[in-house]
Amino acid sequence: MKRLWQSWMIALARSPRVTRWMQGNRATASIARRFVAGADAAQAMSVARDLEQAGFKTSLYYLGEYVKDPAVVAENGRQKIAVAESLSAAHLQIHVSIDSTQIGYALDEQAGQALALKIGARIRELGQAHGAPPVLMLNMEDAEYVDRILALRASLLAAGVPVAQTLQAYLKRSADDLAPIIAAGGQVRLVKGAFADPRPHAHQGKAAIDANYLVLARKMLSAEARASGFRPVFGTHDEALTAEIRRIARNGGWQPGQYEFEMLYGVRTELQRQLRTAGEQVRIYLPYGRDWWPYAVRRVGESPRNAALLARAVVSG
Ligand SMILES: Cc1cc2nc3c(=O)[nH]c(=O)nc-3n(C[C@H](O)[C@H](O)[C@H](O)COP(=O)(O)OP(=O)(O)OC[C@H]3O[C@@H](n4cnc5c(N)ncnc54)[C@H](O)[C@@H]3O)c2cc1C
Image (tube, protein in one colour):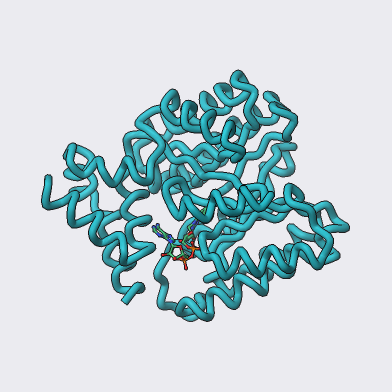
């Protein structure tokens, strides 16, 4: 049932007509308010400051994906640099998330790489703010993009950019992609994966994906990972997984802050607070911008319980 619901929502996310209609329809903005931190960087920065005061870290994400218009690609690049500068000016850690397909990879790989290097160079130059090193976090997209995104990570790393990589537990290949990053002392955010992919390269069903998440989490919290200086990030709202990860971390001698949890703005906020109160480092992924529909409807797809949210927005539209 969840898989079917998720597939419908992914189809809605990819429809340009539905996107235009929803983003032009004020009533559906209730969905945007739930999952998106604001229409522009000023609003997102205000939310980021409030969260920091409440003891959370943040990662800023200017919305937009699978972009094919060169003018929008250029604007996305400017926005990524501008928000890094705003974070630096506000003395907040520079932590910016990015999709390869929003900076040109769906259009021209070389131009996309050049723009990623420009953003990365600016982030490196801005350097440490708020006592924490800057991070350019590469999101992971559908399976066709994995090799290209890992190659992008390698080129950013070679240019001295403080780059971190998202990997997805639903993909069987992720163990092989993770191993060299652990050995080199890099940083990985582990997520389950926001794609419903029936093909054999993907684990099928919650039980298999959760089991692989834990296999990978154990590697990320292994003695080898500690020795190499690897920085584990667990991007999940799954309480059973966060409990088990905390247990593994404690047994392995990891302190909160040497690893962290990261959750999406507006999702399981009570769990975010519980973990924070228990002394864990919790980062909130803060999406903002006007191109909110594809992101927000995928969040709706992650829980059939969000059906009511969608129905209310459409009916009152
Ligand atoms: C910081 C961060 C970054 C991410 N980056 C990427 C990425 O780069 N690429 C990618 O493919 N995916 C990404 N994702 C999405 C991820 O792959 C999952 O689709 C999403 O996090 C849901 O999985 P879960 O681990 O929370 O587990 P689930 O088993 O889906 O959910 C666990 C619990 O949380 C609740 N829950 C989860 N999501 C929602 C929601 N949207 N609304 C209401 N309740 C919810 C569920 O109902 C359930 O109770 C990211 C997620 C996070 C947290």
